[in-house]
Length: 420
Image (cartoon, rainbow, N blue to C red; front, top):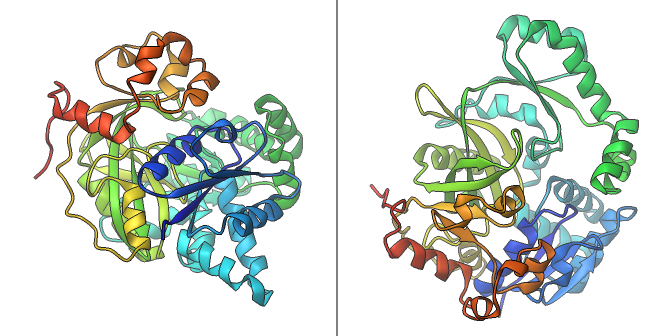
């Protein structure tokens, strides 16, 4: 029987749309739940889509689950993770919802991990695990606590809000004279009025309902690691990592934001840390781990856990690095293949690099341009189809995985094996 996957998203990030294609190509029947206007609703890939309503988030998820009857749920942003945790608690009461409880646990992991993955200060405990390095990270509530933390651990440091991502609520602090201003700025960002302004600017009404439902998010402070960003995306099952993709950032879309160009690497340290955490927390499904690679030693320092799909989970880079295919094998009870060698290749993520700079050299042949040609509606959504002729579109029917593997095999000068 063909497995079914439900992709759940509340933000107009491209990862849900890209994952829809990847899961379809891996042999899944794909469904999606997202707010009105999300690009996934206009795509031809999903078998069906459902509306996520800001004022009834848990009911929206429950309805999508009951209508699609998926074998797996893949959350695509942190808000969905919180609402699935909430649904897990509510569904545990009526007996007729026991299957929803089991489905959420199959998709996310053991319930004991739920409060841990939502809090940034959980890194302090995880840093004690073998193969895990993490900078000092603590929750703070008052400016006095912040001053004491700085007196003990020093600067520079990063102030962060729980439940946020993509650098939207991060304040770097390097000067002791600016501690009060930085902390006040973070307090304002977590306050209701600020959330209203942010909701209006980002056209994200869900922020208002988040504040009413969850209250103000917590603040954490993290020691700064000088280095370059990197991350590791994994597919996991009951505490075991099935497949993993590690990348280093080549270009950021914004200074503190998401990557727009990445380089695939072996990333042994990142993968070892991911395996240790997945095993310790009993995680399942898709998740990602953000690192900083120390300038001095090259060591990978874990700075954030993303208990959800990230923007590289759709990359299908062969055996051991094909996350959707690994999850299908797990659902069917089949053995995982021996991992293939990793080839270093630069990938311009779509639409991130296109949105950053339409004349970027990374879009003009110096790397792999990760464009979903098989979904014209998605291309039009980001204004990309205008630069493509019909023959190009018609000639690009093959899957993204096949195109990427062919690009690596044909001897791209930046693509070299890093297998050991």
